[in-house]
Image (cartoon, rainbow, N blue to C red; front, side, top):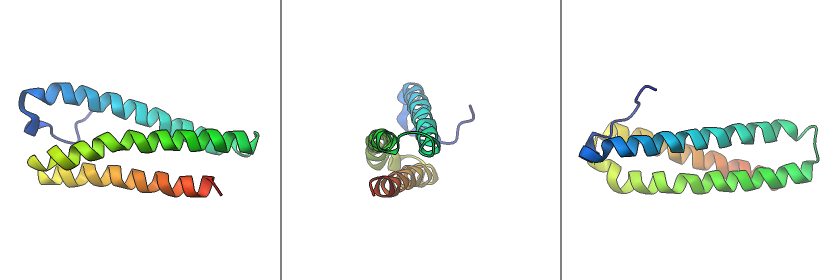
Length: 107
């Protein structure tokens, strides 16, 4: 996997954080696929059950964004400012998208 961001500001801890970020990314991507499949299945299944499941998954994804946003806000600014802005903005965009989808899903 190509590295998009640098963990150089972590010094010797950079390796362990890289593994945690990769794990977080795989979980987050997998949950994204679950959201996509849930949205597509709304046409064919019981809407109420699928919407309830979808809201639960979205809430989980929302909570999954809290640690990276918090950690990047606290520690990320000590590294490359471009990495900091890029990564933090990606998490914030994802949170805004999740909240918007939650609002639509709960109507």
